[in-house]
Structures are given as structure tokens and as C-alpha cells.
Length: 306
Ligand code: SF4
Image (cartoon, rainbow, N blue to C red; front, side):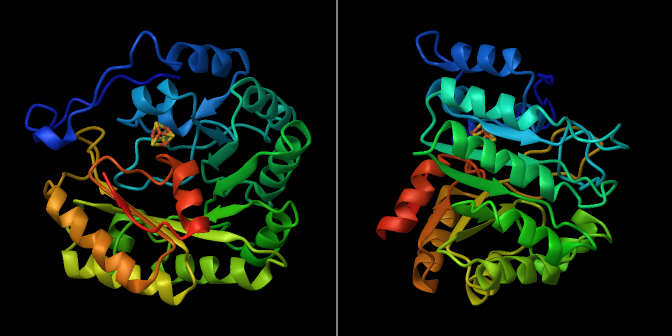
């Protein structure tokens, strides 16, 4: 469901945060109608992403599985929080694969809400989705961006990895000092690091791991670099860094507008730390140009700042 545009702080957004409206001659409307036909959700809409005109315009989107309602309530996130109703729709993976094929995607990106109410936290649904995409689009690569699978981590990782996603993402989101305040007591900075390391340990194939950091929540630049250092120490290949946008007055306030020069600084630091790819820029999101992020990491092209 398309949400209304965020209004808070829009008026004083700096020039570098301005985005273009979708162009009539782009693929935006084609993508929107395929998603509607497939009754599919995207994080692009649910999180009110500022890049939707660009991403949908180039024929890409990030699917959001397991429903619209998240069992967590992170202070920066626009996804609806509450008690989800019922079990996952067993036909969603097939509809998603069908839409991905109609969109002619070569890299399919899938994320989800947190489902702490499900016994497997949604791991089986992730695996079913990856397999459905593989059947329909054998040449495509698949990237997932998962929750932390609270309490059933090891089993959930084994279930998902058995379906062999090409890229396994889990966002650390913020620096250690702010983690609990922003993400609540159920999430943990160290758990996120553990999960990313464990993916590499459990996978019997070359999987890329990836994580994202939101800036403008009250962290210092040194803390961002420290977080990148922690991610590298846990084998993470790809990192993304982007500016926080406050979805509503209920959400935490923006602490600062991070300047493009600071994003360049993060990129240089990330390069020096040895990430395969660093996407760092005001409008970067973990799924922003995910196909290019993966390609950069695999070909050693390295860092990009937008
Ligand atoms: S950056 Fe990601 S969430 Fe935002 S519009 Fe693009 S694909 Fe969707």
C-alpha cells in the first residue's frame, strides 16, 4: 500500500537530499501495475523510500514478504508495527517469482518484516521464495535481507542457506552505542555481527554477506567507522551507508544531515578496510542499485559514493 509522503523535515532538506519524481517514459508504472496484479508488497512503498521513482523507473524493486505488519518497532522505521494476522501466504513465493520474471529481473532482492510470532520466524518462507525464483528465473541471482530470527537463529540460517541465496544481507542499522535505543531490547548489535559471521561459516558455497548503516541518528563519524571495522572483522563483503529520513513525528528526530563529503570519507574508510563494495551516499539504502553492489563486490570494482 502506497503511504503518504513523509512531511517532517522535508522543508529543510538540503539540496543533496532532493529526489526526482518518476518519469512518464520510465518503467515506474509498469512495475507498479505488476506488483498490484501480484498482490505483492515492497519495502520501497512500505518504508516510503525516496528512491522509488528511480528504482521502479529502471524496472527494479525490493519485494517484502511475510506481510505488511512487523513484530518490532524500531524508532527510525516506517513499516507498520503490530501483531500480524495468520500464517504466511503459501502462494506468495509463486506470485513473487512470476512478477520477477515479468519484470525481467536479473537480480531479485527480497526482504521481509520481522515475524517473531512464527515458530521459524519466517525462515521457511524465505527458502520457499528463493526456490520459487530459481525455478522461474534460473539465470537470476537472489539477494535476501533478513531479520535476526530471534531465538531460532542457527536453525533458521540453515533453512535459508539450504536454498542458496547469492547475497545474504542483515542490517546492523546503527552504531553500538545507539543500537538498543533505536532497535529495542530484542535486537542486539553483537547478535547482528554473529549472524553475519555465522552465515559464512554455515554456507557450503561462496555467499556474499552484506549489511547497512543508517546515519543521522546521533552517531559520530568515528562510531560509523568503528561499526564498519566490526562488520569487516565478521567477514562482511558489502556495506551500505545512507542518511536517515524521519518518517513521522512519532519517529526519532534527525540528528544531522550528513554531508556528501562525509559519505565520501566513509567510502574511503570502507575501501581501506577491504570491503568488496561500499555504497555510501545520502540516498543510499541497502537495496539501492543492489545489482550494481553485488557486481562491484564480485568484480573487485570496489566502492561507490552517490
Ligand atoms: S532503494 Fe531499495 S527500497 Fe528504495 S526504492 Fe530502491 S529498491 Fe526500493
